[in-house]
Structures are given as structure tokens and as C-alpha cells.
Length: 576
Image 1 (cartoon, rainbow, N blue to C red):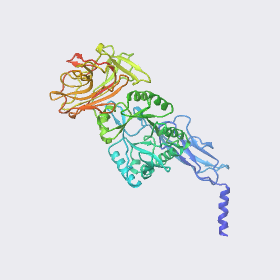
Image 2: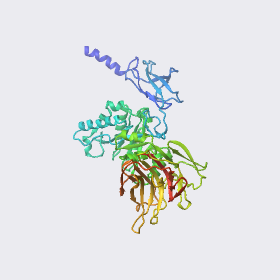
Image 3: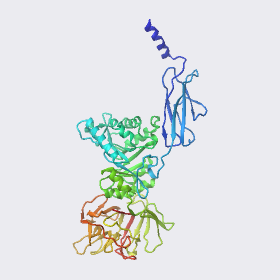
């Protein structure tokens, strides 16, 4: 009989009965970086059946609805907002009140990383750059447990190094997301992404996550696994967005399109504002692909730092308002050269070293004319960090061109013609005593074949001392023109030299040259030191009082020689 008596109320409950419904389960954003946060809810139980809800915001009037979400139709003010909700039955019985408090707050900062609470590395010229530690994991050990322990050691080390972001590569193996480089059978021994993201030090940190989804066979199910983990483990929040990145190749680009589609679902409404999708461009992809990615709603693009015509792609993405990044940098001089040009740098050196290079207060000259217009008669540049202007009506001032898509560069460039003796003087900009110089330029050459014994100076302070970057063809019928970085140390010139037979006038080249006061004189073209012959020196560059000149070699304070023909979009000089 007892069993029957117990069964009766259970049957009655299953059939539905009059009573107070359970409180609904409400979700929202504790902190919202936008003015119209959304709240969602589900029934707290099935007995008695919930048929409607009523809610109010900030102690306003109750509103009845059958929906399971609410977004204000007008902007809220910054600060705390109380959302309250009750579940109701057909008989107008109402549950106790459930509530959720959302704080509307903004982490405003300049540039692409607005909305990020952490302070990224900031350059002397106020460009904010996320320094991302590349491949912060281990996948080569014999068991998932060993790989997990080693991965967390690397993650914690880069957190201690003050990395702005942690990069993890992800594949799905048997529908389990694992942290590994390659989408192959070796993934089964890699650490589970869920275990990595559950780490308390990672969760309590403020580093951004750069999650590269390397699936070669994308599917909605696999992409959903990643979004579910991000949601369940509390990432992608106001102030700490998650960057999901994938190559834009035919087999992998679908990872991004599927993510974009899934983020429209109600389930992901609370993380949707804090997911940024980045496409990593393949070697054969350029401005046309960037335009398509922009139209598809991709937030940013990342390029290999050694790409041909790199700045034509980076500048075009910047012009569209997309985030930009380069990967993966293993040379300090490359980190320094890119620090003003991109929003993210993925590095293979310790993140702390890279961060120091980005933030170092050592800028002597910076000019990038891609976004300049000459109608006002001025071109902006920075001298020792201070904002300055060049006047285009000055004697011997270069011409100017503006290029659209389909070219090696995008936007503005200076046109220097040797026959017109074009040049720009920037005054006496020199190294510290006992130290060196770093030079970075984006150049399109009009004249690569020059006569024996001739010199064409791209940038020079070489007045029987100093430093410079030049094309030179030594005397002799057997010689060929070379590009060389010149530094005067201990009474003689020292060089980094590269033949230029493989350079073309139709392309643009990112040239980085450096000497730090002890060691090799270094030169890199498009991220490569291939075929460069370098002298070694010890001692600071010999200083002089001559001006630093773009497009010529100074002779004293007012004369010049060895004029250059070509286009220059960007030049920067740092004490090194």
C-alpha cells in the first residue's frame, strides 16, 4: 500500500497540477562591453508546467512574454543593471524571482584591441601590439598526461614572461579536441584542449587565447565542440576576447565560415561579441582574398612575415579596418621592425623579450605615407617620438603616388627620381655612443642596374662616418650591383652585402638592417638573410653632425650626392 501511496503523487505531478512553478534558470553577461546586453533563460523544472514568464529591468514594470530571451530595444547606460524574471503557469501562479546583474562597462583603448582589459605592449608611438607566444604546447611525448603537464609548463612560463596572448593549435580526433600541430593520427596522444583550458592559472590570467583550428575536414560538429568549450570554461568574456584563427586555404577556410554561422545561434549569444575570427593567408593569397574575407565578416588577417609584397597586403587590410598580424618572428630585429605596422606579432622568442623590444623608447625616425594625402601640402612623420610635418613644396621634395588594389603596395608612396635629385633631410639622428642602429624600409626599385663604381643611397648618414643603406656597384667589369648596409666603426666601414640580381622593379621589398655595437652587421630582405655576407665589428657607429637623408648621401649640412630612384612607402630608424 505504501508503494501505491508514493506512486499517486508522482503520477499526479507527471500529469501536471496546480502550484508554484520553479524559478527559471537565467543566463547573461556579468560584464558587457556593449550597450544592449541580452539575457536568456530556461524553465527551472517541468512541474508544474511553465507557460509564460514575466520580467523587469532595473525595477521597472513587469512584462509578460513566452520568449526565452530579452535584449533592450534602446541603449542602456554604463553601470550595473538588474534583470529579474519569474516563471508563470496557465493559472497565473508565479515563481519566486530569479535575478541576474550585468555591468555595462568598456575597456576602451586605441586601435584594434579596444575592448581588451589587459594592457598590450605599447610602442613609443602609441601603437598597441599583442605579443603572442607561438606554439605554447607540447605534443611529442608518449601520453596525453605527459603532453598536458609539459603544455601547462609552457603556458605558465609564457604567462610569467608577460605574454599578451597564448597560441594553441587544435585538431579534432575522434571528436575530442586536442592540442597538437598536425591533423593526423598522432593527435590521439596530445593533450585534450578541455584539460588545458580548465587550468586554473590560465583561467585566472588575463592573456588572450589565440586558438588555431587546424581541421582539414571542417564540420559543424567539430566547430561546435570548440565554441562549447569556450563557453563552458568561461572564456570569451568582456575584456578578454578569444581569437579563433585558421588558414584561409580551400580545405581549412570553412572552419571560419562555420564558426561565423554558429555564433548566430542563441546558445552563443553571450560570447558572440568576444570572439574574433582571424584568417591566416596562404603564400598565394593577396589583396583579392583579403577583400573577400572582409566581406565575409572575418575580423583580422595574419601573414607570414617573409611574404613577397607583404606591405601591399598588410596596408590594404588596415585600410579596410581589419586587424593585422605577422607570424612567426624569431629575430629581435624583425620584432622591432614590425612593431608600428601590425596589431599582433606571433613570436618564437620569449614573449618578455619581444615585449621589451616593442616597448623600447628608442625611435629616431618613423614615417609611413600609406595613409597620407598631399592636398594640404604636408606629410606627417615622427622624429624621436614627436609629431612633425614635411612640406611638399620644399626644394627637391619627392613626388607622390597613390595605388589601389592589384599593386605591390597599397596607398601612398613617395616617388624619388635621381635626375631630379629628390631627397628629404631629417636632421642629425644618430646612435648612442658605443651603440648601433636599426633601419627598416619598404621600397620599390626603379633602378637596379647601375654603372660600375656607382652608388645609389636609399637612406644615409654616411659622411665619412655614420650609417646608410645603399645600392653599390664596385669598379670592374666582373662586378654586379649589391644592396649593402654600411656602418662606420673604429675608423673603417663595415658591411652587410647582398647581391640584387633576383630583385625586380615590379615588386616591393621590406628591408631590415641592424648593427648593435658588437657582432655582425645584419641585413634581411623580406624576412630572409639568404645570400647576405656580413662583416663583424666591435664598437659603436662613428657619429657625425651630418643630417640623415632619405634618397641621397649627405655631404656636410646642405649638399648631397648618390641620389636614388624608386618608391619609398615606409622608413623607420631606431637606436639599437
